[in-house]
Image (cartoon, rainbow, N blue to C red):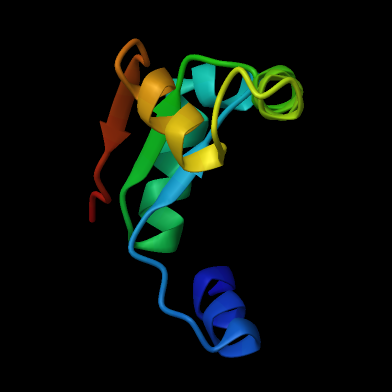
Length: 87
């Protein structure tokens, strides 16, 4: 399957998939992805491109120390849903 192909190409093992953007709002897509990949899918209620842009701007303005700090601050208000693989 695709997940094993990614793992072979990267030499890494993936324990979850993070989804953002429009597709993350589609429950069927999230569940089908978890089923096909065999790992949990965590969907977030945010637009990844916009949040990434904001993070970089805040770091450049020195309003936030670094990306790790931004993620910690963001995670306090982040809504997420986990889809576990079903057989």
